[in-house]
Image (cartoon, rainbow, N blue to C red; front, side, top):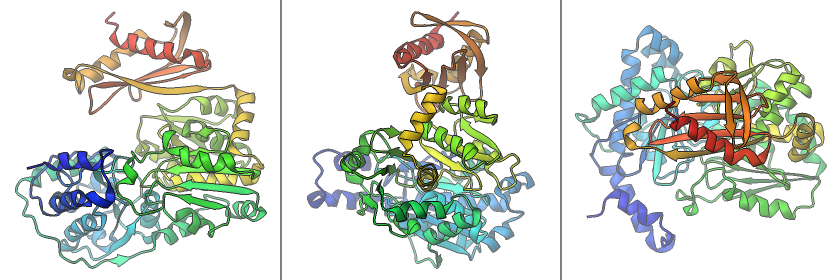
Length: 539
């Protein structure tokens, strides 16, 4: 008898034909709805992700839902502070927002978790159906809910589903919360009594309308300026949704403008057989349209399935978040005249550091993970982040959600174009002329499996001793002097010419991840080789 994993391999093979082979998908769905097999839960910042039908099943979602309820019942005062409520009774009064992306069985999985809250006496269950990740954060704030449950594995392939938990501030849950959910889920897993799905009463909400109201209330985006750009009739706007939960969002938020062309909006939980991430390869459809456009203004973008990542194309070049984050930061300071700080992860380009230094704006560099931006994105933050972004295409900004928000990214890009009269590539060229170019890249190499975990962390951390400020490091045939060393998340070595390398251990795989950035594009390979040598050097 075939395992669920074997069935998924057939579904994801090039030979799979939806018209003839959908019975395979039905087999997976049946397994997900009926299996009583347990699984190990690891609930991190991005939630728990598992294979649909084997790990991610109705039964196991009931366990996780029950574990979250139990967390509230047993929480300490310190944990309640992180959750943003004073008691379990407050959870019952304020309620929970629940929704899903476009994956298989999203509605059913939501019902399984909702049932656990209802059994515990939580009467306010706000159900948004298919929702983008930032809409959960907006709904928590606008409805004054206690938390949200988001069924999404973000940009993972179609065989995965996921569940994310956000506390009362709408931001990603910190480790003090997720560690408790992980522990309780695994404690309850084996002895849990599975109940077949029953009907659930919840209040349906319009998450897009709530999100629009949130944006206008917060003043995060200058909509009147965008409307003027749309009314001029000189813009071609192309949005590729890759069949995900952002479908229809730009049209609804912008009033369905004539300039908008939406790609891959059909319902397809298999994503047409591709990995649904905002990659260069997946931008090809956007490129084809914009390359043929004669419009004065051109903007294209691609979202991931849950709408927390975005990448741009302007008809001349691809603009990833390393570059767009720098553009957005410069715009907020020089055109919007806002005051605050820039927040970025340690693996993100230092292009914005150089810009911010000249503008006199502090840069807050954090470990990888959007939860680490909370101190500068929260409503009570002082100073506040004008822009918070990470190299993996996530962004938010002043007075916006504490979660990554691809829709905010699109709207801000339109605002920048409307105010400056420039396409993104033109703005980027202006920055290059003033501050010089940066060439970021990332790669990885495998290590022995025995190193996974603490040994790998220790060997990475040992690199710091070999690259203290003032140390000379050979990059190819060039000797560079270390200016600064950061050990926030792995080891980041910054040289006097602003080039840098970051060496980070993978938390789950026998891999070391290398991020580099050079002023000279020809140094990319030499930087990677030097970083690898520092890792293996026992001296």
